[in-house]
Image 1 (cartoon, helix red, strand yellow):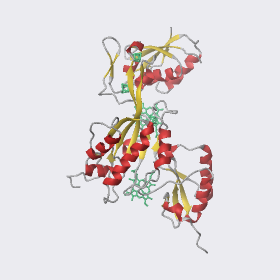
Image 2 (cartoon, helix red, strand yellow):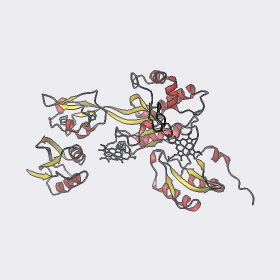
Image 3 (cartoon, protein in one colour):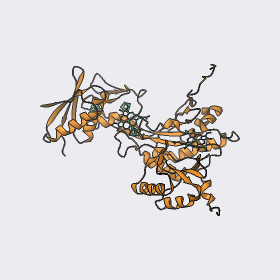
Image 4 (cartoon, rainbow over the protein chains, first blue to last red):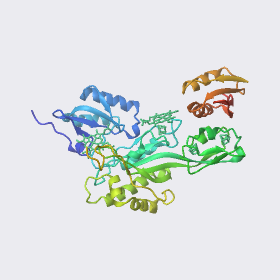
Amino acid sequence: MAEPKIDLKNLKAGGFIKERGKDLFTVRLRVPGGRMSVDRLSKIAAVAQKYGKGYVHLSVRQSIELININFADFDAVVAELGEEQQKVASCGARVRVPTACGGCEYNPNGLVGTQKSALEVDQKLFGTATGHHKFKVGFAGCPFDCPKSATNDVGFQGAVWPKLDSDGCISCGLCAKSCAEGALSMGADNKPVFDAAKCIYCGDCIKVCPTGAWSAEKKGYTVRIGGKWGRRPLVGTLYATFVPEERVVDFIAAVLGWYQEKAEGAGRVRLGDIIIREGWQSLLERLRSEFPEYVVQETIAPQVIQSQLPLPGQQA
Amino acid sequence: MQSIDLRGVTCPTNFVMAKLKLEDIEVGTTVEFLLDDGEPVKNVPRSLKDEGHKLLGLQERDGYYVLTLEKGAE
Ligand code: HEM
Ligand code: HEM
Ligand code: SF4
Ligand code: SF4
Ligand code: SF4
């Protein structure tokens, strides 16, 4: 039998992952933010039915993975998915498909347009070679942070800064009751007293206030950098607050630039480990030069989570 | 004033019950809802505001809360 001809361009872009069985691969699809039109979903179902084994896998990072695809069918799979503009994802040392929750479109907690941000990052940065290791970006709509944004190399989380117009306040007390952080209490004049040090910018006070006495002074993303999961987890730490949605791509590009430069020669090392090696000051100062109005005064190194035994200093 | 007791009812059933009760009430009428502390008093007022009703006030009673509101237009 003649060897089937395969377009190697498809393979190099990544997204085809070797399975256990001979000739079989998983095909990881590009689903930024987990949003999928029903037309596209139907096409994927048809392709999976035709070339796969009767099921797909929903990955932890919101991809749909076609299982048990024979490598001889790669070109046909790519072509048929292309009929609904469905693309294959990437692997390796690249910017990966961004993840996102539903954000503010329909979730009552959402504060910012996470879906829009994920799409924009996917269009402008997806597949960018880092030169070192994978690079993951994620978006959460509000401080509940369901997508666990701080486990990404760069994690974004929606935030809103509340502003009070005392004259509009009818002293109902709902905002103070709603604030789960203890940042609001009712003062002697029966108006809310705001403690900025406790506020996490969730916007619950704005959402509950019956008169609109609370409003949004500014909105944007809280940004945490240096996270990852896997065998040696790190939780990313705070670098910037209220980064506007339209600066997200520039911000990620600046972090990527620093990473590409500082990880030179380090091999397959994730951003968080480079931050630990170089010191957070270096990255913070680089970002401050480009985003002075959003970058915080100081931060801390990515936080090591000991998930393996024996713990350091102990013998099993 | 009509008083609707939602104590002992958890989220989101309390909100759905409030919504159903409000369907039988005329626009512009003031009603009160009795809500447990915790999730109910944090979630129900905001959700009712989202539905277009006018929140008027919240009072703490013995271990529970009384939310007053004016029914909004459909
Ligand atoms: C043939 C090789 C590999 C395959 C097939 C593979 C496959 C995968 C898949 C499918 C996921 C996503 C799981 C999900 O979203 O449900 C994943 C995540 C991950 N992979 Fe791999 N992988 C491979 C090699 C590696 C290597 C060499 C590393 C590290 C040195 C690695 C580190 C990780 C980490 C840390 C995650 C998830 C955590 C994160 O998002 O940071 N993988 N891998
Ligand atoms: C109207 C009320 C709520 C709605 C509609 C809601 C919706 C959701 C949704 C859709 C997710 C999954 C997001 C995803 O995986 O993409 C989620 C996760 C989560 N929610 Fe909520 N939620 C609500 C209230 C709450 C409350 C009151 C809390 C905590 C006090 C909470 C804490 C969380 C946490 C921690 C997660 C992440 C769970 C995990 O790590 O698996 N949520 N929520
Ligand atoms: S992070 Fe906020 S907006 Fe996103 S799903 Fe969770 S609660 Fe909703
Ligand atoms: S934004 Fe959230 S944390 Fe801050 S005062 Fe309002 S309710 Fe409290
Ligand atoms: S919710 Fe609005 S009206 Fe009620 S006390 Fe707070 S600021 Fe005043």
